[in-house]
Amino acid sequence: MNGAHDMGGMHGFGPIMREDDEPPFHAAWEGRTLALSLAMAAAGGWTIDMGRHARERMAPADYLASSYYQIWLAGLQTLIEENGLATREEMASGVPDAPGAAVKTVLRADQVAGVLARGAPADRPAGGTPQKYRPGDGVRVRNFHPTGHTRAARYLRGHTGQIVRVHGFHVLPDASAAGRGDQPEWLYCVRFSARELWGEQANARDHVHADQWESYLEPA
Image 1 (spheres, one colour):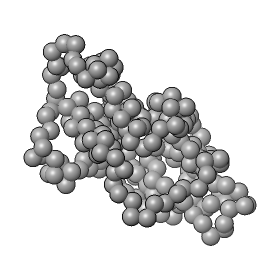
Image 2: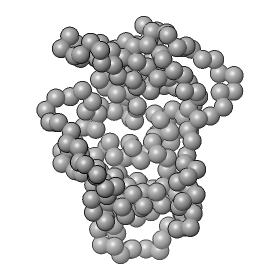
Image 3: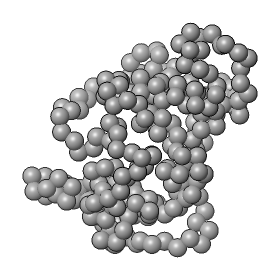
Image 4: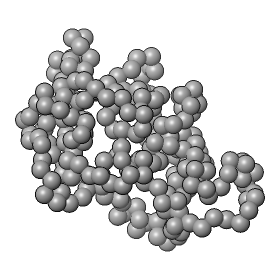
């Protein structure tokens, strides 16, 4: 979707301010938000793509006025509510109005290190699905505007680049975020010149590499 989150290549947001020796969390609640997001994904059974889409659906003014972990917390509250695990009123008060809903999985404290170490790989067996593009092929990102989640950044759509690497067969985020299953596709790393994306004022030596699923692409 073309929301406030998709700000790649946009002007007006100022420079990115880097903090030397930046800590993982600037306040204790940020660490708790990350922990809750991990635990509740196991309990609710939603995917990483569903989590991203929940954050993208924030009202634009709220999204732009929120910090990184404030956005995570808002997305988590949306998923908890949509999956019937708690109401907004219950989350605000901290007091349940009814017996707790059954959850899919309980992530115990002693399981966290193992879960983080394993991760959640998104590669899948290709099963004979033919690969449409090869390194060196010229491609164009389709100029499409879905209302749901997509990893095809708006500033890439309609622009041409070159396949430089094939990552394999991976879960399609667009389908995963909508609860339609994995629907895996071939995933490619595409190299775009900065001038292709931003015109002659860009440095001729600069390039952007972006991973794109096969359905996002068409031959250039």
